[in-house]
Length: 68
Image 1 (cartoon, rainbow, N blue to C red):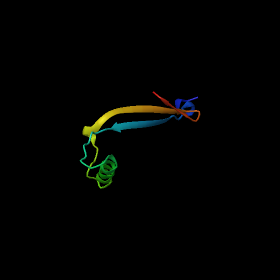
Image 2: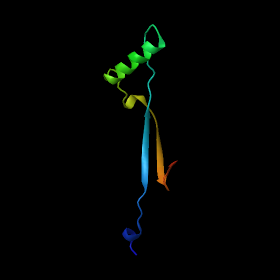
Image 3: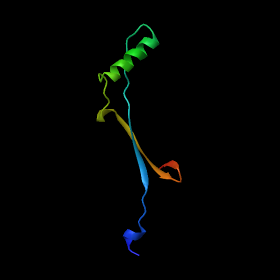
Image 4: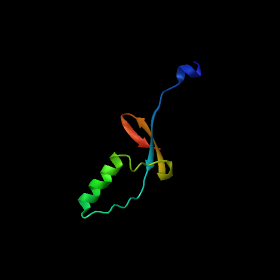
């Protein structure tokens, strides 16, 4: 058998995490959350490479995901 005939396929997932601390001025926590979500939805807050925190790799085996 050749290497091509014995090759298998493996399924991986790559997860990248971005994070940023944001301060919102508001009268209540609910109002602050609303403002935050609106700013994010309206692309006033956009996370990018400078907000990178970490990368995780997972492999899919027998209908389960395992972190590498």
